[in-house]
Image 1 (cartoon, rainbow, N blue to C red):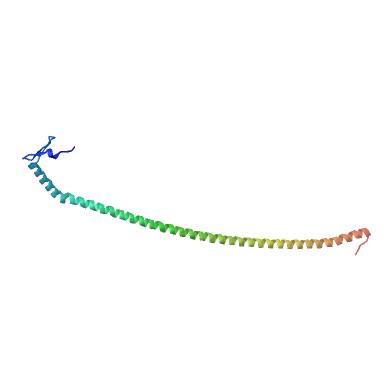
Image 2 (image 1 turned 135 degrees about the horizontal axis):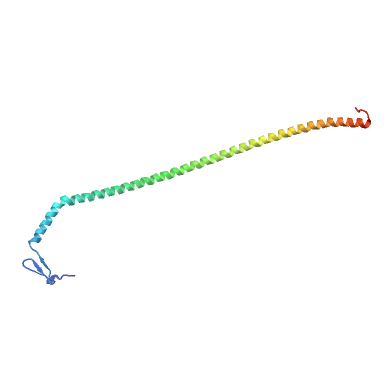
Length: 164
C-alpha cells in the first residue's frame, strides 16, 4: 500500500485530499493534543519515567551484583573442592603408608611368633627324645639284669644246681 504524494493536494484549511478519499484535519485539536502530550511528558518524566529508570538501573545493578556474587561463590566452591580433593589424596597416602607399616609390623610379629613356636617345638622334641633315651637306657638296664637272673635260673634248672 503505497501513497503517491504527488497526487495529494493540501487545502487552505489544512485538509489533505487524496486519491483514496482519506481526509486528515490539521486544525487546532492537533495542536492541543501536541501540547497535552508535551505537558504529559513533562509531568510524567519526574513522576514515572525517572523512578522507573532508577528501578531498572537498581534491578540491573542487583542482578549484576548477584551474578558477581554467584561467580565468586562458584570460584570459592571450586577452590574448596580442590582443597578437599588434595586433602583427601593426602589422607589416602597417609592411610596407605600406615597400612603398609602395620602390614610389615604384622609380618615381622608373625615371623617372630612362628620362630618362637619352632624353638618351643624343637625344645619339646629334644626333651621328649632325651626322656625316651633315658627310658630306653633304663629298660635295657632292667632287661639286662632280668636276663642275667633268668639265665641263672634256667642254668640252675638245667644243671640242677645254682650257678654263680
